[in-house]
Length: 107
Image 1 (spheres, rainbow, N blue to C red):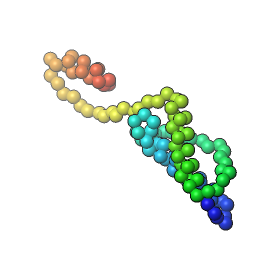
Image 2: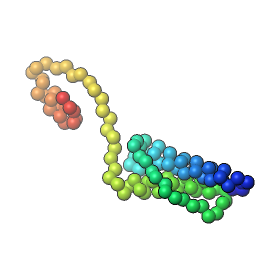
Image 3: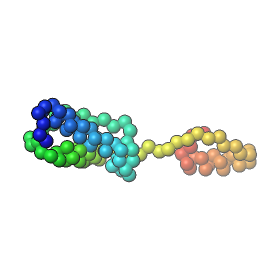
């Protein structure tokens, strides 16, 4: 990257880091799920060589680093939840409660 303004070159690399993070949260480590509530703090980064293609390598490195860090913590998926009204006769009420309990429902 050849540029007269050094801060412009670093802004491009900053956007590569942000894009790498966005790639990470768009496809999580468990089953390529969208991740929510994830923050990454980059305290410091340095680039010694200013070559073409560094921004692409920086994106891939940021995504791989975030994935490795996420795998070091307990991972979990968010289960879908919906609200519904179930109507049944009083004779089948016990069976309906049993089925709902198997499905982890809250009555």
